[in-house]
Length: 292
Image (cartoon, rainbow, N blue to C red; front, side, top):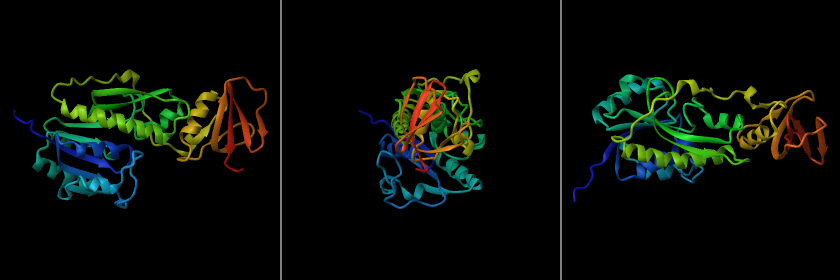
């Protein structure tokens, strides 16, 4: 029986939590042969530094990487060097994982099958650099993971594979990132292995949304929100950012959101012990203020 030849892949990535587990899976897969690995980082992490919610550290990656094929880049101008190495190695397909630079056509066109990207949202919704934050910000009950072809426009390429992800109330940013990374690794492996038979689908621009990197004003919760949306967001970004609730009573920094109710509340704020019950459009959220 004739063995199947390996697929030569090029990987351009960052050392971030969403990218690490899919990267680990690609490097572990015996069907794939990484011919170029370009990692964007200003400083290499300690060998024991945990890189992923799924308990992978930098040493785990080092055991899988051919060090002669790894390039560390921290400036956009270094893409010229990567372009030369891609042209010399002739990969079958290229993969982007949280890569911070827009890749131009001269690089996209080098691999025989082009480049694909892994994105933690149901494209065309939530294009942009931090879709998990915005999923929590809007209190979405569902998101997803998408593998799509890379074009010169950010997150706009045709969709190859996509899977929905339900978001239980109270899910944290790290939990959602973990779940999307696991699903994304499966989708990415399937997309690469079946790239010749999968038919990409153009994105519907009428449904497209884009969000930039979060700013400080995006950490402020309005009392005009529903109680469920406020709770989902406050609980979601807990431990990653410090949000606050605004209103006629001033601003309350929130350390922790404990629970929410959708029963109408007659009072703006009601204090009990160290907690505060904050009224929203259709109910209330009980919080522990950060200044307690």
